[in-house]
Length: 342
Length: 286
Image (cartoon, rainbow over the protein chains, first blue to last red):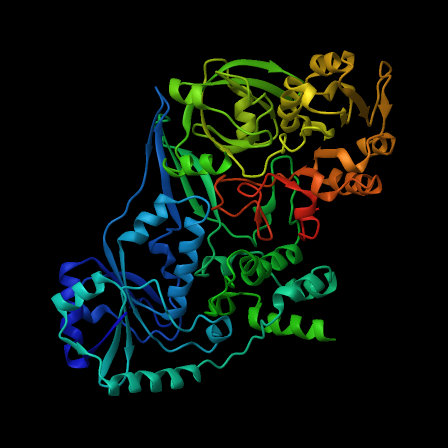
């Protein structure tokens, strides 16, 4: 890791240089309340003041909501793998979202290498930026408030300068080509430490996930609790669609109208939708809302503790803001904790 | 061997199937059909092998992809079989395909298989319910091909009605042999039925094998497992020697789509065959 500082006066030149030479994807304001990661054509389009989180999360760049896997012709069957990827810069992703992306990296490279994801990831240049958390953010409780890996450059606003952590040779190259940076001095490290202190205190929400993993064994069979937590759920799947770490997908085949060419593609799926656990013949492994909510919390807070040693929830709070039924994961975590301690 | 296979799969795009041709079909029951499949590519055809219990993702072009286990013997060269119940969109489309039709095959998948090597020198009890006979048929064949390496062999096979029994002629042939004990049972007998009546579970207490040298294999509808487990534990069979076929909705087959997970286990990658010990405390599994 190298440490540099960029004077704010040179910030615009740096970004304009990147935009001129690369396909840059950055946070853009799309309406009064929402931001989205979209292609950026000039500097003014970028809006880093996104307190409200971006919807959908940046995972769509690596794992699009719908993506072709193979195409084929039904006459003298010929199969072609589909995989679109190109070099891009993702600018302005914050720490917890980047940690979400790091989690997806593990999913798509464990057991089997998923080329469709991995090729996009390898070609993605990531320039992260520390941002202000929203009122529903509990990243500190999930240990995802800092980005330690997965980026080329990571920028932090320390007053009149940006403190830049450089993690890859590509990052060095970008800085040397487009930015007038200096080595970080002792005063800059001090300012960065001060930022971190103030940053920690901006996370207002607490969610006690300690021991959730063991507690899950105890609460698994408490049907009344699960019925209570899930009673308002519409099974709409919004929580999954906005989640930076949800990765479930359906695989489907479609024929074009000529009935000769077909495409096998994947599209995001949701574990909260009733037919998620449905198999041919009509058996549903998770027939009711309580099963499904329990499964979602299990996946976010237990499954990957067992598997990778980490929660798969990064605490961004998007699902809390999106849920039509006001189901709130951190309140439920605390409710579960209380239930266990009774 | 399994690792090698995983390595091999890593080198080819995950979602690209190999093209294969249906060379033979046979109606096994009013709802189940047997297919004999041959890979078009000569090299693939000669290389293809699998472990008993592993499964394939079968594409009916234009319709979709679904997982099927392989009922033929891993030693069968040049072709393999599928047993398909007409019950979903892909299986329904399969039933309409004729000899000569092309399908796509990915796999074999699954690190969990019936440990036929470990079973050597032991008794093996195979308990199958309904379509559950298909995955275990490859194991039965494998054991019969090397019969002297195993001790006792018992097949308990149950289904709803006599006309729904799979591989009827074959099962009748097995009944005639003295090196395999075949017990059949149906829920609803007809006037010609002279075997047991009721669920498979009823036949377990009569097993004479002792826990020290017995492996048990279970495959059937989800409802069957819980009751079979109670009976097998009653017999004191060791949980690490009881193997269950846990089939869920395996869409991608390679541990990505997550539909088949049970807690931290993925049926498609870690299974589909699990020992009872592995899943005993795995919530939602049984």
